[in-house]
Length: 339
Image (cartoon, rainbow, N blue to C red; front, side, top):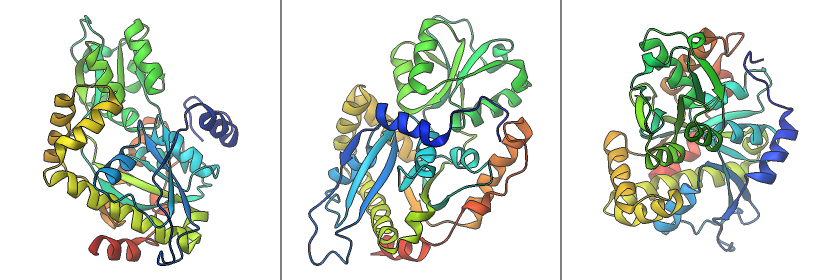
């Protein structure tokens, strides 16, 4: 159980999330007799912020899958994991943090099946335009918004430690990205720890960076599938193929197609194309997007995260993260990545 603010029952929450936040974006292709028995498969997959995976697959002309993919958009990986647990998603994408909290009750019905290396940029603590706060140390006694059970929760905690502060030294306020941005601009919080589109928007509105998770986060982004999905051989085969396609699509972007991807990204994130292009180049320079199978090193990395949250008090008991990792996809994924 979590000491921090509890949410309502998972099924009820996911139903509300799906009603208000979920956006289905087709990434399907016509099935045919040569599809390897996958023509009847539909993968319900999650994405945070916008359907970047559908976009990159389309741009690389790799969206002609012999199965159907329905991309569903959420404000964070934590909500995706709750949707997986409730049976609303087959697979979720997140940082290392959401699976820790999704498994904290000891009843995880999902497993991490793959790791996507990615950049750790746009993971920041920001102060609003005109603020006199310029450092993390100045947050003592201040109301600070953060996205609970996500990278923002983790890097804010670590940044406070680096500044010689405890979590209890701030008035931590859990907020969703959009709500946090509104609170920051409205003056009800002194700073906001978030990621992605909300940080882009914050800077567009004059916010300044006072701390970054760039050198704190591992860059491991996890693909977690429900136990039911893993037990379905057809869905597991489709998932291996989908992840391999995503890996190839990002390689295609790196191979001289950043400009095209920047235009798509800029439209989705409502920022100038030049800014989107620079972010893409900076991200790839820091850590190129790459799919990998599960490994002992990746498990150890997430274990460090879980141990930190136990130290913080967000987890009331130790958590062995290897209990919700599996190598069931490894053989198929290795084969698909090599093809």
